[in-house]
View 1: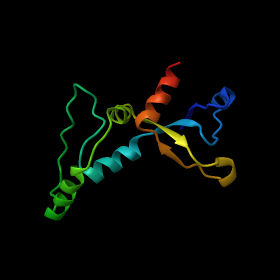
View 2: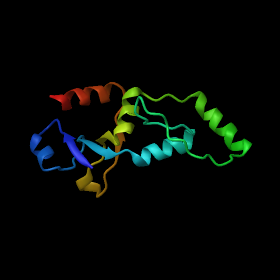
View 3: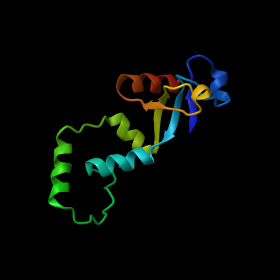
Length: 122
């Protein structure tokens, strides 16, 4: 967990203060393992490398049908796949951590992700 960008004040980035609207880096492993178990697809494999060959346990026909149905509507942006390969995801805090005592947020994707990646390069 690392604060990487805050539009209001760079001091909040330097002190790593969690506030609403801050852009943070989070560990991608829990999201990657959920995605792989939910869709049955390996993601985050860097280009030029093959996916590690793991022994898949036998799956029932019901599980195979369920995974096939989930594959129909599945799309994953290249930017998110690249972040999964690096092990870090950009997220935005949507709650007020000081008020509620917990920190909720969303994973950035689409044009919002592109905007903040451009801001971080500066």
